[in-house]
Image 1 (tube, rainbow, N blue to C red):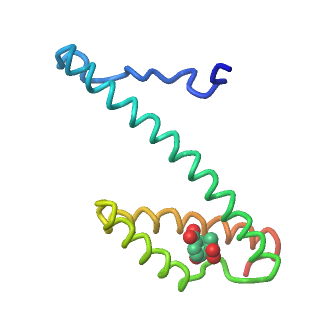
Image 2: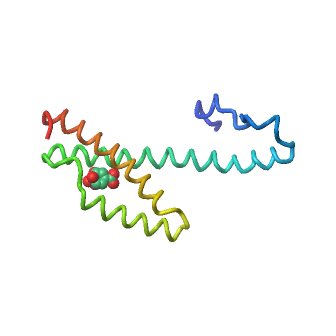
Length: 121
Ligand SMILES: C=C(O[C@@H]1C=C(C(=O)O)C=C[C@H]1O)C(=O)O
């Protein structure tokens, strides 16, 4: 099966560096970028799954009139991800910033779901 619509207008060779780089360097760059493309696609799918799960949490909280944020859960999860990041040689400060960015968006969604269901919370 061919990949539908997904990357129809994506040019994996797009680069502002083409006229500054020797062909063999460009070939290596494009090979590594192939991996980056796969990783980025995976990130999108992973984030989509995570937001699907957090949306379920949002409806559950709204139904039971619970607040959108759970600070103790956030602290536990951030600590865990910082430790995982260290093990994986990823900057833990970056891991924390990234998770906080996602969590703040989730809380915004939960507040919106709550407003929709209960007229605010
Ligand atoms: C998803 C939840 O809601 C919020 C978002 C969290 C997250 O995205 O990890 C964690 C805690 C909550 O502040 C939850 O309570 O589990």
